[in-house]
Length: 244
Image 1: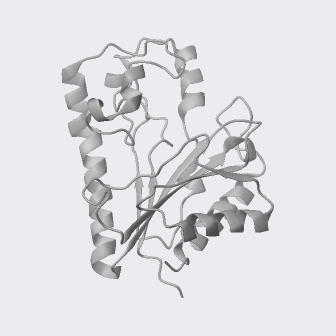
Image 2: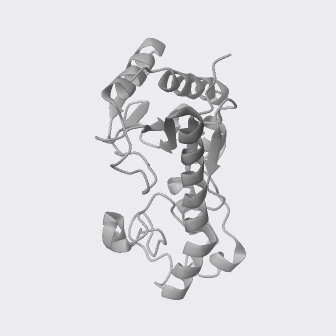
C-alpha cells in the first residue's frame, strides 16, 4: 500500500458555522446573510477533498465570514483588506458593510481562530517533513461560474513544481473535465515558516466548480456529488504520485 502520510489537506472555507457572539457583530439580515454564505462558502469541500490516506486534514472550524484563514495576518500585506476582506471581513463580496471594524474583535479572532489554525497547519507540515523529508499541501476550494471550466489549478512559482500542475491537468484531460490555471483564483497556501524557503514543501490549490456537484441557488449536493468526490480523490492521488 502506498504511504501518503506526507500529504496535508487544507480546507479553509467549507464551514457555515457563525457562533452567536460573532453573528451579533454582523449587520446583515438573516436572508442577506444566507445569501452571502451561499456565495462565499466552499460548501462540502471538507467532504470533497477528504483523503483518508493523508497525514493530516486541516479544516477551518468557522465560516470565512468569521475569520478567513487564507488571508495574510497583517492587513498591510493583504490586498483584499483594501476592500474590507482581510482575515476579519468588514464588507461583503459585493461591497455592503458586514460589520464595523473593531481592533479588539480582530485581536480576539486572531487568538481564537486564525493563529491556532495556522499553528496546526505548520505543525502538520513540520511532521510530514520530519517523517518523509517532504510535504505536499492540497489546498481545497470551490468556486461558482457556469461559464468557467470545471477545475482551476492554483500554483505558486516557488512551491508548485511544473510537473505537479501539469500532471493534474493531464489527469483532468483523461477524465474529460475542462480546466484552467490560476483563474478565477490563483496561488496556494504555504506556512510562512516555509514560504519561499523550503522546496521540500510543495503546494497546489484545487478549485472545483460548484456547478459540478451543488444544486444551483442552494447549499445542497446534487446527484453528481459522489462522482466529483471520487474525481477529487483521484486528483490528490495523482498529485501525491508525481516525481519531482
